[in-house]
Length: 507
Image 1: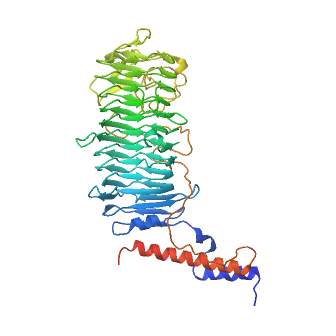
Image 2: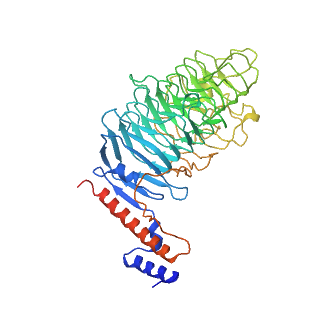
Image 3: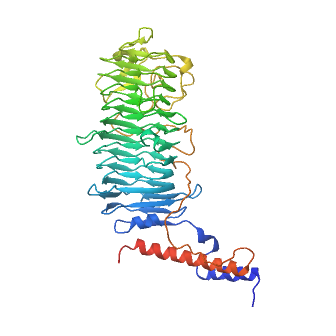
C-alpha cells in the first residue's frame, strides 16, 4: 500500500530515533582520538568536514610513505592536533621518504605535532587554506617544510608559530614556490616561526625562508631566524601584489640577511649580523630591483654593507633605516640611482654614492646596548640622546614598529618607536618572538595560535562508501525519501563502525 510523504518521513524518523540517532546528527562532525598503535594515516584520510582528530603523546614510528588528501570547508574545517598537554612525535628513522606527504589539503589545520627524521619534513603537494601551527620540525634529511610541486598554486597557507631547526642536504627551513614561477604561493601568512641552524656541515643551501619567483601577496612576519647557511629570508619577483617582510629578527645569516629581487615591502626588521650584506637588493632570475620599499629597519653588520642596491630598474624607496656597518658601507649602490628615494636614514659607514646623504650615528650612543657582536644578548632600542629619535622623514613613517606599537606619524629611525620607559616588548633572544598584533591584509590569518583563516578548495577527500543508492529519486517521490534516509543511516553506521575499528588498532 502506498504511503503518503508525511507518513514515510514519520516512519523513517521513528526508525532513526529507535536506533539512537536524531536526524540532524547524520552529518554531525566527530572528534576522534588516536595513539601510536593506531593507523593514523587511515584515520586522517577518513576525516570529513568539521572532524577533529586528537593525537595522544608518544612516538609514532613511520616506515612507509605517509600521505593524505582531505578537504574541509570554510564553515567546517578539519583539525588534526595534539591532545592537550601532550606531544605526538612522528619520526621516520631514515631518509627514504618524507616524514609526511600532504597530497591535497583544504581548510585543514595541523597543530602541536613534532616531526623528525625522513627526507623533507612536511611536503605539501597541493593545498589551499592549510594551517600548520605550533609544530616542531627538526633533524630532517632535507628541507623542513616544502611547497614546491610544479604547476601548483598554493593559496592562503598559514605557517604559524612553528619551531624549525637542524636541517640537512639542501636544508631550507621553508622552501615555498618554484624556480621561474613554475609554481606559486599566494596570499599566505608566514608568522611567528622560530627557525635556526639550517647551517649544519651537510647543508648545501640552507635559507631560513625562501619564497620563489612569481609568489605574491604573502606576509612574512614576526619570525626569529638565525644560524643559516644562505640568506635568512630570500624573496624573488612576484607576479602580483608585493610580498611583505616585516618585524622579523635575524642574526648569523650565512649570506645576506634579507635578499630580495623586486616587489617587496621590507619594514621594521632587525638584523644583527650577516656574512654578506644586511639587506641586499639585486637582480635574481627574471627580477631586478623595482617596486621595493625598505623602511624603518635596524641593521647592524660587522663585515658587509648594511644595505646594498645593485642594478636598479624601477622604483626603490629606502627611508628611515638605522644602518650600522663596522667595515662596509651603511648604504652601497651600484648601477645607478634613477628611481631611488633615499631619505631619513642614519648610521655608521657612510654611503658609496657621495650625492646621497645619511645622518651620522654612533652605535654606542644611539642604542641602549648594541654592539657588532652579531647576536644577542643586546638591545637595539633607541637611546634617548641618540641620533634616531624623531630624526627620520615623516612622509615615510610606517603604521607601527617592531613590537606592533602604532607610530602615529612619529618618524623615529629604525625598527622601534622610541619610549622613555625603554623597550615595552619582546627582548632579542634565542626564543620565538612574543606575540604582536596582526594586521593581516589577506583573508583569515588571526595571528600566532589563531585559526589561520578560512579554508576551501575542490577535489575529493579520498574514497570510502558514500551510502548512496542508484535509482533513488529525492524529489517529490516518498519512496525516494525513505530510501535516502535508509542510505544515510547505513552510511553513518558504517562510518562509526569503520572508525571504531581503526581506533582499536590492528587485530
